[in-house]
Length: 112
Length: 113
Image (tube, rainbow over the protein chains, first blue to last red):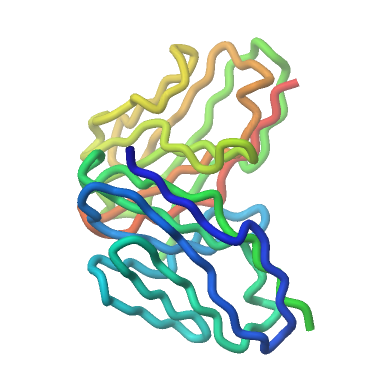
């Protein structure tokens, strides 16, 4: 069964304190790993898609990486506006290109 | 471009009433998804459509839930009769193609009293 586990559940950082969020997955034949950001009262906002081990994507202070078992979302010198819940999701052959399996998310709080 | 539009944003109703949630996907997207988000179970896929046709409704919790997509620009999720355990945030998402990311609306927060 396809499964996604995110850690930590919650993370508190000081502004400028870099860190990483983890997404471990079990899927028979990955067809894409997706990172989303969700703000309170809003829907998930798409950040990145990764398809194969070794792939990396960057956007401002965020960098996503992928191995055969996990993905990391690195946050460099975070700012308070980076505070949000970060969700990881995988797409595997069980649902073809149609079903995303989401992790429970990491709640990030960045304090000035 | 306008994103996925959902209405209403909030709905409070009494147990037993019919509830209809609405979604307008992004123009040009050919897949539409309905999700439910709760603290206990996170984001769960309820049903998805490709080219207006329901493909997989295995996530629909029970027969009280139904979804339709009469055309490419509109979908509804209906709960009849509603129960307190249906209280959750319901999201609609749309996607342009097979390996493209899904884009979400801002959800409907549903409270069943």
